[in-house]
Image (tube, rainbow, N blue to C red; front, top):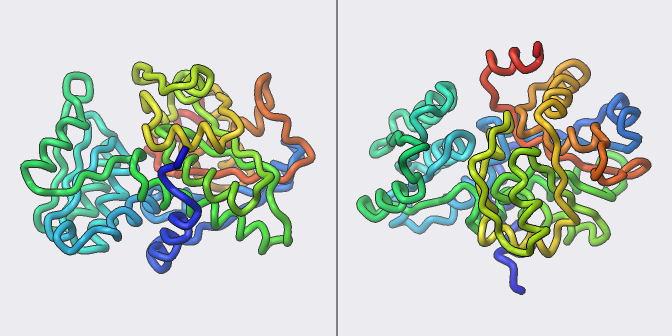
Length: 333
C-alpha cells in the first residue's frame, strides 16, 4: 500500500522549516536512566515555537500554499495547539487565518490564538459548541464561503511530514551527542499526525528501530483500531491528556501506523501526573499531560508495556501548553 508521505517529504519539510521552527534540544537525565533501566533521550518540543510540535506541521502545510491560497488565507479547527500553530504560521507567512475553536476552550489558548492573529486583516476566531455542533462541518462551510484553504490538525500529508521533522532531528541530535543510534522511540498518539510522520522518518534513518505509540487509557481508539484492522471511532475520552482526546485515527495516518508502528500502549492519568512531576522536580521543565504520554509509558513499566531496559530510547515530549493553575492542581493532587 502506498503511504501518504515518504521520507523525502519529511526531508523537504525540514528545509522549509529552517529558520522558522526551533531545533529543540534533546535532554538526558541520569535519574531517568536509572528509573527506567534504559538510556533515554527526550526531544523537548515543549520548547518549540507556540509551545508544541504542532508548529512544524502547520508551517510546512501553509508554506506550500500557492499565491492565490496565501491571499485568501487558511481555516483550521482545533481546541488548542493546532489553533495556535496555524495562527502563528499564517502570521509569519502574511496570510489571514480563521480558527474554529470550542466556546469552552481554555482561555489562555483562546487568548494566544487571538494574539497571533492581531493586526492580520481577515483573521478571526469562530466559536462553536462542541457538544451540539460539528467543527469539521463548520470549517468546510467557511472554507467554501470564503474561498479559504482548510488545514485539518492531523489528517493531512503536509502536516504529517512537518511533524516527522521532530524525529528526524532527534535521530540526528542523538548521533551528535555520542555517535549512537536509537533502538526504540516512544511517541504520543492523538489523531496520528505526529507518530505517522515520526515513524516514516525514524524507520528510514534507522531501519531496525521500534516505534511505539502511547495513548491515554480512556482514549485507546488507535490501539483498538490496530487490533481490529480498521479505524475504530469512540466517544470523546475523558482524560487530562487533552491533546489526545481524538475520537479516531485519520484515514491518511492510520495506514502509516499499521505499517510502521510496532504497537500502541496506554497509560493512566495518574501515571501522566507522575511523569509531569518528574519533569518538574528533576529536570526543571514544564510538560503538558499529553506531552508526558511517552515518558509515562517508559517510567511506569506496567503490564503490556514494551521492555526497553538496556536499550537506547528516544521520547518525544510533544508540548508544554498547560494552564498554570491546572498544572499546579495536578501536581499538588
